[in-house]
Amino acid sequence: MPNTRLAMRHIKEILRLKLEAKLSHRQIARSLGIGVGTVSTYGKRASALGLCWPLPAELSDNDLEQLLFPSPQLSARHGRVMPDCAAIHLELKRKSVTKQLLWEEYKQAYGDAGYQYSQYCGYYREWRAQQKRSMRQIHLAGEKLFVDYSGATVPIVNPDTGEIRNAEIFVATLGASNYTFATASWTQRKADWIDAHVKAFEFFGGVPEIIVPDQLRSAVSKPCRYEPTINASYQHMASHYRTAIIPARPLKPKDKAKAENAVLIVQRWILAKLRHQTFFTLAELNLAIKGLLEDLNQRPFKKLPGCRLSQFEMLDKPALKPLPATRYEYLEFKLARVNIDYHVEFDKHYYSVPHHLVKTQVEIQASRDGVAIFFKDQQVARHARSQRQGGFTTNTQHMPEAHQRHQQWTPKRLLSWAGTIGPETHAMVELFLQRKQVPEQAYRACLGLLNLAKQYTPARLEAACLRAQHIKALRLSNIKSILQSNMDQLALPLEPQAQASESHRNVRGANYYH
Image 1 (cartoon, helix red, strand yellow):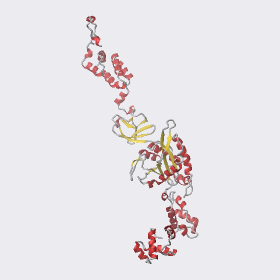
Image 2: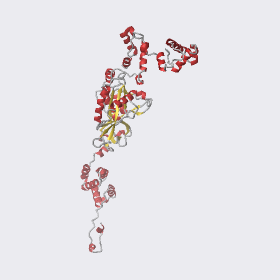
Image 3: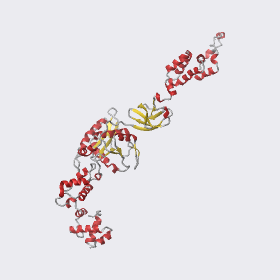
Image 4: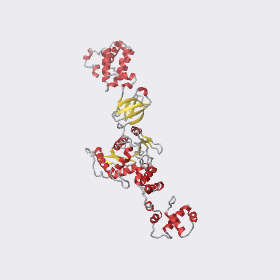
């Protein structure tokens, strides 16, 4: 048989030149630019079949091809046992199983009734060529898990408001057995994407060696044909389950043909069946999907023995790695630079770190309940996660000593300190606190006033506060000015006295204008 089968028009031209023109094999080969051996092979087959030129009108191209190239079953010698090509295809999915090993087992079973190795492999190649294109890839048991979103969504109705929200459908399928998992989530964001993987591993009861996703944002932070950058949260999940992530190349659907086919099957056998149902919760939708998944995975194959479930039990399940002892907890990662106020921002909230890390870069690892901060792979801070946007979570141990002392001040403590100096200073501090809407806004003025007792005697500070209250000069700068000008040592101005002339009806006096 020729190494490469020619197009039918070339075959007919060989037959015409040989049967009608009576040219030699060498002349035909030179005329058509093909090998002499190829011409000889076709000539011998035509002679054996008794063909003549012109060919019968009722002989179609397909009929001619069948005559010249009969199927292996027709050319098989009597008494030989044909290899079970479907069984060969399934066995090759097992680790370390080769065609040589399968042929030796075949020969042990059938002896002289079995074909030799080259014919055995030839029949398998021809069988595989007749299958669907996706069958041409051989996936080893437990090796790859193909994951993707279906693209089609399912509406979920809020029973209270009537608002409709569409749920995304995550699909995962194992390469060797085609055993399929599906679940609904609200979004395709990282948290839902990784949670769907965790549920898939628990559904399969094990972990594959490789995960093959598309290069969507939740999986790949920097898409690339050759070296895509895996999202940090996704990579952390893979490390927890001791698996690897190898994204499909962009615009190369053949890299994830299994996922494409699984998505199509889920849309046909699950989503299409749910199209007339109304769902009010995500849990209700997932319960319906779970029931239809059982039917899908037990549906018999058309060209292969068994079903997805039976193939999973035989191939993938024994080869999957066991689940880790603890379930993965989702973490979100972020690099951040420490601000001058020794806080870092995550999800619009600010968390403190030790003050000596100001202006350095740290890594934030946030779970649903907590926020941990790392510097050079060492944890330097941990806080409960807060949902208050714009707020601050501060550990006083992270503050400089001066800031810690300031943090310890309260209105009660400030008034207590002022009371040790004297009643006028106490009254002035109380006035400072009352004049501000938030007491903390008056802390600096209060501390500035109380620290004046270090420069001046308590008696002078008391006199200055008394004078300031008397003349209604209620600012810290006024009290400083009184002390610096020694006005606190002067007698207080007398209150305006009622004058005798006040009884005159044409003299109004100063109080009239107040």
